[in-house]
Length: 96
Image (tube, rainbow, N blue to C red; front, side):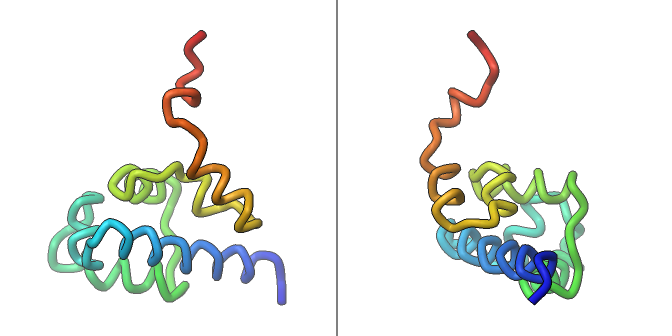
């Protein structure tokens, strides 16, 4: 399996897991992330299935709605992803 398809599969799996953990429907997540209501469900479905890939701005908006760092979706290792989720958000601000 190619690394890109593995990363894509990981993104798809984590997006769905994060959405379900928040109790959001595909349509609800899409609308909250600024996707037009009539296409919100289909777009999130296609992201979760790996048919389409979100651009970076959309990835950031999805992460904000789901209250996870965008890096969580892209971490290649599940242990690293867990560490990213556990990292306190305030420490990431760059403030001294």
